[in-house]
Length: 335
Image 1 (cartoon, helix red, strand yellow):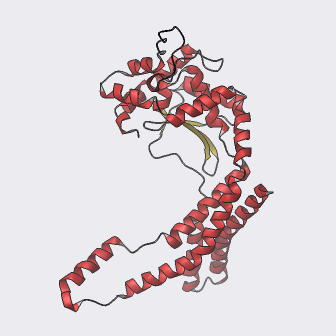
Image 2 (tube, rainbow, N blue to C red; image 1 turned 60 degrees about the vertical axis):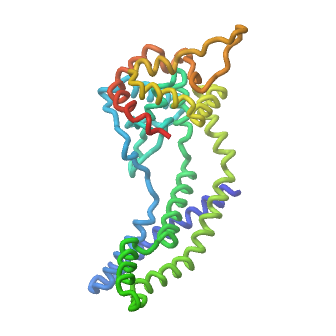
Image 3 (cartoon, rainbow, N blue to C red; image 1 turned 180 degrees about the vertical axis):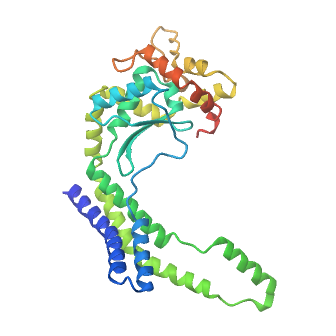
């Protein structure tokens, strides 16, 4: 019931956005001979465009890999996608200073894109690389979730426009300098300040319903979190076990493998030595029992899976060597 209510509320938000565009176009078409109609219609269309749902785009620091130079990586990504049951990524991109991986469909054409964080990829064993991609593919939102998320982004734009506006800092500094130079002949409030004050009042009055709508939609959307987790786990279990999913989630959440890699990069070690150290097993305890996992040995090598063997994983590393070499120079910036 709450899921349906969230969908209906999101559709109302999208309908309002579309209404701005339609009303703006209608105003121009009906009154083409009046310049004021063009101005008003253009303003309404601009508001609708500003409030449009965001269709997703690649991050600015993402580098799309050429399929011809990364055949092994594209092939592995395709195999895992087929097993999960999602569309094969048309683009595979890497990011130098981001952990984990993400899968999304971007743009009007809903192009499937896989983005891989190089620090995590460098440190993971073949089996965990499969688990990383499986977890990323399993996060793909459903159509209902896309509609709700789009409505939340629209409400966020409304909130920022109505409540986030503030006087220009440069204008305030200029006003302060003028007032200090005049001393006793201090200037009275200008029309700019009065208009800004009135605008903030109007924004707060109109922003109340926006904040209430956003709050209600977030509450309704959160009510489906348990169902989304179950769906994600069901997708991921087509490739990996529940234990492997929990393990990769824990590794990404803790980020405990990052500090040793940062230290190795600062010492000037090579890509090969950093990866070898990340995959080295922890030494056994004195009593002969397996040693507990420590922050610098959390990524003990696991055998390759049917979707990615050890030899193929090494070939992927060869394809990404140039990107690794560039990325490790900035590992110290990872927080």
